[in-house]
Amino acid sequence: MSRTSTTATTENPPVRRLSDWDAGRLRELADEHGTPLYVQDLERVRENYARMASAFPDADVRYAAKANTSRAVLRTLVAAGAGIECASAGEVERALAAGCPAERVQYTAVNPPGEDLDYAAETASERPELTITVGARDTIDRLEERGFDGRLCLRVNPGVGAGHHEKVQTGADAKFGVPYDRARKTLAEADERGFDVVGIHAHAGSGISGEALDSHRELVSRMGQLARESPVALEFVDVGGGFGVPYRPEEEPLDLESVARATREALGEVEATLAVEPGRYLVADAGVLLTRVNTVKPVADGRVVGIDAGMTHLARPAMYDAHHEMRSLAPDAEDRERVASTVAGPICESGDTFGTHALPIPERGDPLAIGNAGAYGYEMSNQYNSRPRPATVVVDGTNDAVDRRRETIADVTRLERRVPWV
Ligand SMILES: *Cc1c(COP(=O)(O)O)cnc(C)c1O
Image 1: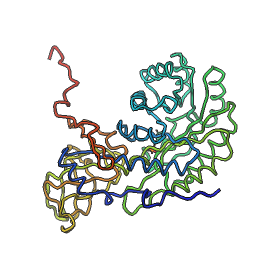
Image 2: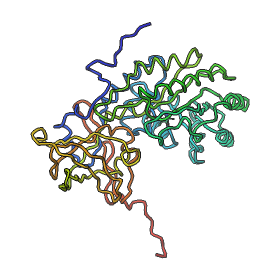
Image 3: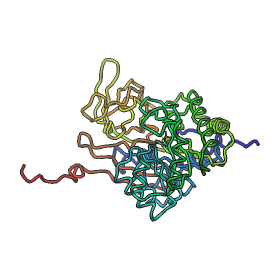
C-alpha cells in the first residue's frame, strides 16, 4: 500500500525554524506581556500532531504531557484526537481537568510516591478506564494494597537506549521498567493476581534521529517479539516517544515517514495496536521564549550580553548542554552588523549561559527570541535565586491569551510559614 506523504507540504512543513516566526508579532507580545515570556502557537501544535497521526495512521498517539502541560496545549491535543501519557498524579489531574476522557489517559508510574498511587487508585475506582503503567513488581504490590485491580500496562526495560544526552537515555537504564527477560513472567503473574493486563510499554529516551534509528528499531523489534510471546492477550504495544527535533538550523528535520516505516517493519505482526508517545515532537518548535537584553559588555572578541531569562526559565542549556537558537527582534536588526555575543542570564551560576551567537549588535532593551522552547521549557522552570517563573501566552491564528500568569516577587514567599521561635 502506498500513501501520499503529507509531511512535506508547504501548509505543514516538517519543521518551523526560529526565523519563520513573525518578528513583529513576537515583539508586540513582549511589549504587551513583558519578558521573560513563553509563547506557544496552538496552530503549530495541531500541525505537528496531524503530521504524527498521518505517519502512524493506525497507531494510538499519546502525548507525553511532561513536555508541556499548558491546559490550552492539552485541550488542543485532546481535541485533535491524542491520548495523554502522564508522568505523575499531578499530570493525571491536569489531563482530566483538560477534559481528556479517562480511557485516553495513561499514568506511567516511575518509582511512584505513595501519594501518587493513592490518587491513581482512587481515580481508577471512579473511572476504571484509566490505565496505569508499572515498571517494577513493587509497584504492582503497592497498587494491589490500594485495592486497584484495573487496567495495567507493564513497562519493560528492553536493554537499548537512544538519546541526545546520557541524562535522557532511559531504555537501558535499570531505573526504568522490569528487565526484558522477566517480562513474560511478570505479565502472567499480574494476570493471575486479577489485574486487567492490557499492554506493554518501553521508552528508550529522547532523541530518535537518523543515526539513532537502529536502536529504535531494536527496541521496537524486542517489543514485537514480547507481544507475540505474551502469556496474556494485549490491547496495545507502546513503544514510547523520543522523536527528535532539530535544534540547530543546519540540522534536518526527522523523516517521520521513514521512522514510521522502520517502526512497522521492526514490530512485525502483532494482534495489539501500536501506541507511540511523542512529547517534544508535538510542542518544541511551536514555542519560543521571549527575553530582553539588559546588559551589554564589550569584550576582546565580541560582547557578553545579559538577558532577563536564565537557567531557571529555560534549564536545557545548563542541564543538557542543549543548543537553542537566538534571534534579535529589534525592528532594525537586519541593518545591524553581527557580532559574536555570549548570552548569559541573571542567575548567580557560571553555568547560566545560552552559548555564543552571531547576533545583530545587541543594544540594551532589545527583545530576543529563543527558539524551540515549547518542550521542557516552562516545565523545568523553577524559582532558584528566588526568581519568579515567567508567564505563558498561547497564540492561535490571530488570537492570543495569557494561559499562565507571571509569578510576582510576592509569590516567591507565598508558601512560607512563620516559625514561632525565630
Ligand atoms: C518523556 C517521555 C516521553 C516523551 O519523550 P519525548 O522525547 O519528549 O518524545 C514518552 N514516554 C515516556 C514514558 C516518557 O517518560
